[in-house]
Length: 144
Image (cartoon, rainbow, N blue to C red; front, side, top):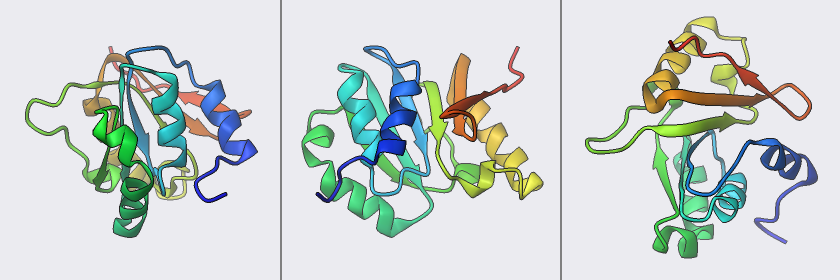
């Protein structure tokens, strides 16, 4: 079924410390499968999925119309190393990324820029999770 969640991605979503009302940023959301799964779990919260691929964002928006209409989910075409909160946009409680090249350690300069943008987008005690653990691991952001 198109848009169904893979067992691995489901495992990642289930490992996230989600609760009702959270604001969640998914980095590298692709077609929006995980973003939809998170939005369904946080009820009155909000999920923003971002991706550097315009095609992925178009697919995500197409497959997420009911959640977008309900105000629970939105998408933005932007790379994480260029992401900034829009005027009036509240910071996020949690961010997560699965298979995102800017955060996998192969490109240190891009990774540092991405981490700086993530820190700026999260509230003071916000948390970042990426794949690479079992099934995810938390990345310390060094925010005081």
